[in-house]
Image (cartoon, rainbow, N blue to C red; front, side):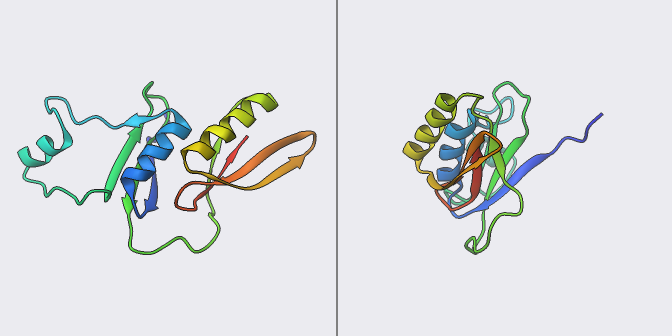
Length: 136
């Protein structure tokens, strides 16, 4: 059996990143634990301090297949190229890829460069905080 894991992404504004990446991946905000109407209710009931807005957020695959993605505020800015990045597999056709690129641009991404290799192409992009990813 595989080991469960989550992807953790450092950021400045977890709320904004959750909004962008929910669009990019079709994920949803992680709901509060069973028996609680909100995360605030859960935190209060368990005597856990409420984090500042934008300090932490999590997305989950609504089909419960893909990994949880956690966004955590950090004080430092991104300064170098990512060593790990996500590839969004938009589809096999140019139309599918172009539609996904357009959707992500509308959501706040930026294009870095288009790569054409071996009769195929993909778009290297950056999310609103500059983290690189590809649309393939």
